[in-house]
Length: 372
Image (cartoon, rainbow, N blue to C red):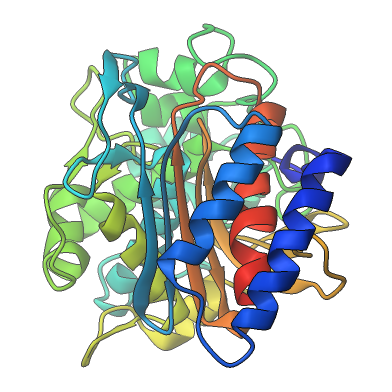
């Protein structure tokens, strides 16, 4: 996903109408925090004029408190493409995270690393899979490390975005259909030197999830429950699995909307939750620091995106850390504003550009102008 896909353009009449409203709102709240009622009108304006489709839930927290929640019914489907029909979304209804799941795996790897259960980031990747020694012996593969998987700079030939999911030529689809998903990933041709170029790769997350499960001797969901979800008092949690019983490590989580927001709050607090340090502070800082540039305006850490955003009608940019998932799932953390935003949508059949247009409008034109 690049900055062009993440960008969003607004109609002139939307900005004019919204601008008048926001000027008044900012003046009214110069000395008071925005309330839930303040978000409803801009949400209505932007949704109406920009024809935003597929929104299921929008949640905002600031200074550790949820200040806005919006839910609406919409068509939904599971990670396995099971059609759920029209779902009446609410705080008690779980929603797919899709690739926002990758950020959770990034957090879990750091917890397991501190527990001494997974190899350090500088460890050779293929050395962790002795069962595929024939692959590891091939020229060039000895250069790959765990850090390359975490930063998605492995340099393997993987195409997940130019072909639709479900197409047998899509690398994610091919991995899911393979008799051995890990052998499939590790046997891919080398397309470039590791550590040089970012390439979106769900296979990298699958490898990391497998290392977590093997090192902790428990399924990744069980480890996540023990070390994250139960301490943070999550509600029902699902982690979808493939035909082989292996979890969709890169995209299989399904959480309650408020629990999705909690993941962002955990990152904002640098791994602390209430009185407990669930994720080492140094690890959170590491995974949210740029490891590779995607393009001029977007970077990638260890399974977390990094960028800057300018709110509609303003000129100052704000740094964000985030997770981006197919269908329009977004989790944004803005440390400067002490802000977390969760956007959950059902635009699975829409283009990546359309998914990003919808989530970008909600991010830039609805939420940020009222809190920045």
